[in-house]
Length: 433
Image 1: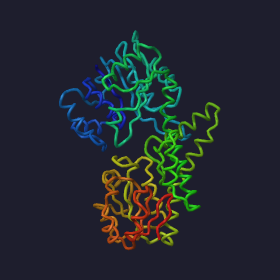
Image 2 (image 1 turned 180 degrees about the horizontal axis):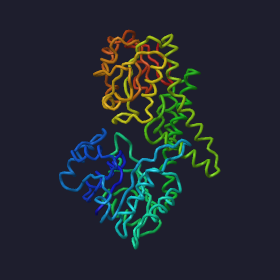
Image 3 (image 1 turned 135 degrees about the vertical axis):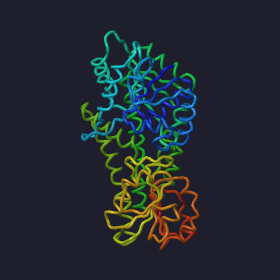
């Protein structure tokens, strides 16, 4: 099958590589010439485990190519997937300008009978705007079908999520278009859910907003635990044992970030307001998340008796492990708040420091966690990389000026940290003396 994927970001590039690996002929298009030049040279523009090798393998086999030219990518394609960004606009809703631009350019180069598939995360009802845009720019006598096929990949495990998804959601206006997507995805042998386009569009935002709600809920419980002396780890164990709740996405910490949860929660709130529905729940979820880092910094300030002139080692910059993505990163927010209060900051991240250097100035970038800890008044864990779980903590203690760790991701056991001689302050669990 001949496929065009518009957008070479996380979603588009991973999608293109997976489709090519399934044996299809795929052209991946992006309007950024530097990104396409790097991809043509075999270099992925971001860190994602396994992606670099998959790009090289399929490019060498002639199944995957990259271009900035719609006239080269779209003609003769049976399917055109639109996977461009839909960033949060000033009003909190999704900015669909990139989506509409991609749809317009694709329409001008579309083959008769092609299926246009919206992969981007969009507000419910966006398909109507895409259809109008396509029809305004379509050549004479050209027929097309339209579908919604939201993605559910997670950065850091995107390839596995694409190859073994929990479900494949297909929203179409007619059965023929749906069956074409079913045929494309059939080799994956995963559950497929067929529905109307509006319902498919809403599935993605509703899913992410629900996950964000779970995180803000457990962070509220963690705050209550800190105030009362309860242990959030024990509370989670008791809650998670209930089959109706389960243990997933009950991880207290300094909040959620990234390109999806903050954006989709805000966009869903905006959708509710536009539709005349209450957005109070989403507003509360967002408010709780916004307070996580300031609250964490407040605990650091209180413990150290102020931050001006203090040196803090921060482990992690990416918004989550196994990625170099800094978008809406709570770790970056932490660094900025520490700097604003006059602290000196030493940082280490296994993958994100190259991208951070132009954005985060006035900090010291270190070779590893031990280098970051050297001479620091305290260490703060901001991203839960496995590398940080496996640290030689006695070596960390020896490197620090005083053995104090603020754990924003609850990586370590308070009992173990106490035995090692640390003042250990985590989220929702009793502090060690």
